[in-house]
Length: 193
Image (cartoon, helix red, strand yellow):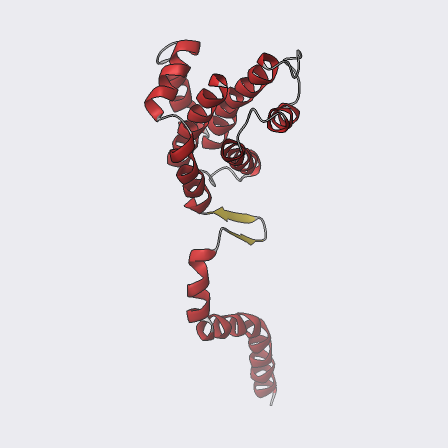
């Protein structure tokens, strides 16, 4: 009787441990078709501390940028004229290999500098240390930034914030390169305003 009682107790404990995983598996199997139709519409997925950002947000900004921002060659020429040819590219590549998120944050500094310079040029502020968001708002309010450029700027700022708070391996080197290209094009446009 003792072995029978032990076996029943073991089976009850096993059922308790496996109950939730089994329920979750059944739900996924039953809802696999509706869930699979929702995945293309998903822009982010969170589970505990894990956050996965999909290429969809980057792709949307790239689409917007193609019609509004200068071509990559012109943006690179503007950057090279200001900072010197090649130096920033080598620095970016080295930083992106170590930390793509850090490379995005570093590239964002070029956008912030362009925004501050544009605000100063348009006599909205003489302070080069004005917060970038305040400078962006002033440029938008005065109509210096068109709505399309402002949308790209806001989208890129959002992605920069994601990169700043993302786990170490959440951003890839190729994503950092893609965001850098958009940031350089955006900085070139803002510098031309």
